[in-house]
Image: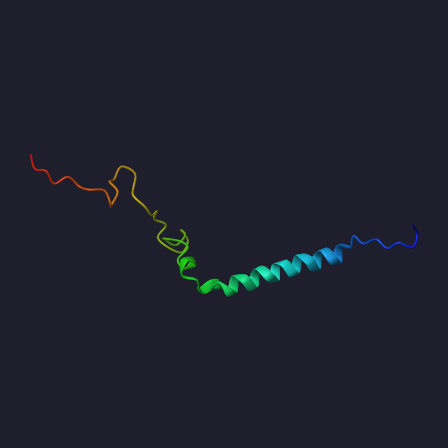
Length: 75
């Protein structure tokens, strides 16, 4: 009818819902340790090229892995 209001909300209601959800996620992140969490420290094993040496990490191609057993059998 002509007297009924549109209950779908508007762009402002959607923006407030999105902002509220973002605030909830940020609060949960801080409650779980946030930036001080131990597993988030040292995201990079080596700094990116402009800040560090630019060397790669991990075993080099053609080199044995550091954890691989070495042969000590003299022949």
